[in-house]
Length: 203
Image (tube, rainbow, N blue to C red; front, side):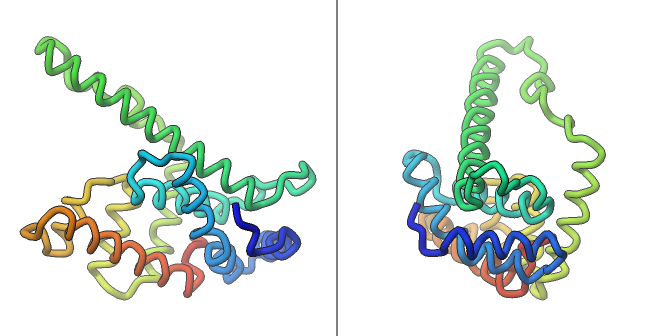
């Protein structure tokens, strides 16, 4: 990854985040979001760019929500720590989608397969994680003034990846798919910029 921000600067931001400085999260996102997306995209060249961006954003959000996840004493720079977290997010998502696709194919070929078996991992979120997610979501939504942006963010945080779902909110379902993707990406990028500018990357 290109080291446009020095490790010492990121470590300083990390310390500010630990001390409760909410602005630090936005500065971390501004420094690392784009470089991380570029790096992870090279690692997963066949994965949709929106998915990569979402996974990197999730890695940053998780870290900002619980900065103690990163321990500088282990000798791993923050940028590398978040890079590895982003890789895991993408890899886990890709594996999950492959498993789900395989189950769907088996279900299609075997009508006796109960649909509920298609996603056996659903609902295995701990109560603590659920509370943190609700708190994080509420605080991020408060950062956005536009109701459409809030609906897009809600859908995004719920794990939705389909372009058509976001296109429906934007009222562009009638446009060609490639234009829908472009406009959906623009909307997501705009929301990310608002969150970073207002420190909303930290829930």
